[in-house]
Figure 1 (tube, one colour):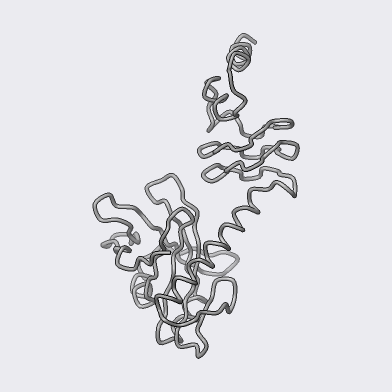
Figure 2 (figure 1 turned 135 degrees about the vertical axis):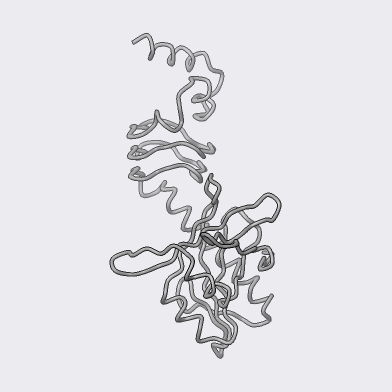
Length: 230
């Protein structure tokens, strides 16, 4: 009981209502102490929640105005239909993809139109791109993507073909020629999802060499040569 009382005394004495600052003042651990919690009545407005683990927590009656959940773990967490950060992620991803396709159209000198959510091509199908997006993660490998066989089938039919890696927190994208990806595929890790194979695309940041496509047991592929400014 004394343990809890100490936390409450620190919070009561704090001159702030900001959730993140209150956690810092209280000494609670963002990675351990907020799993499966009920946040009824809690105000997260304007908070950056990167580094928090909210696994299985209930936010349905919390106030989330402009709260940023990027970099937080929200696996199994429950939100109201109106204030759901996953909806914001989808909106941000759509906006980023549109921005990338506009930049690619300008760079290639041809107008790219959507074939599907991730597939794009010009009017005579001689130029095709697949554009996939990743959020940033706090790790040595900050961006994670997948590459699917059906994407490769789509790209290899075009004269010009690019696999584009978009990163939500970067102001550029990486337009990798399909030939470069095809060469790396035999060395990349692959998985099966419901019987469907896909390859893991991991992008690392090398302090001296910039961003790289990680190729296990081989020399990584520099991505800066494929960078397209947005």
